[in-house]
Image 1 (tube, rainbow, N blue to C red):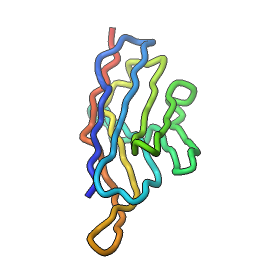
Image 2 (image 1 turned 120 degrees about the vertical axis):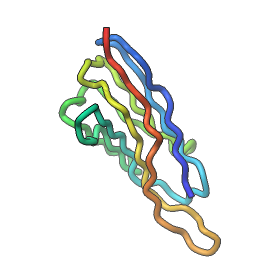
Image 3 (image 1 turned 90 degrees about the horizontal axis):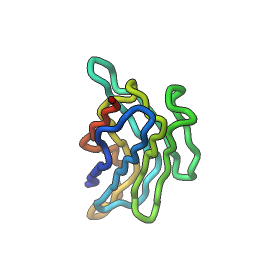
Image 4 (image 1 turned 180 degrees about the vertical axis):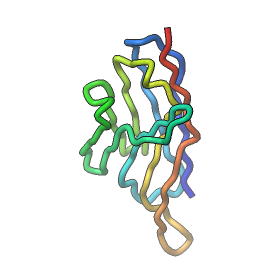
Length: 123
């Protein structure tokens, strides 16, 4: 089907920046929405940023003006540029990608998740 590989997490000081990447691979026919979620310890997973196939974006209020989601359709990759990071941004970040993939005779929908990457904001 479709696999997602995330990269770019790490430890950063408050006010710093990180860029996350999520690359999709497999028999991809089309990619629709691409999203970034995060889950902090003891909290539910929350949607951080969303980008449509046409490039329209939406953000959680807590990250507006600091985070930017983008995508490279030629590389089947979604990015999350995170600036002015705060300790409360500490979480495991997951990408989620929805689209269709080619089967032997038909195409099918997929809804895949990345493995998660840890982002820690601390001095």
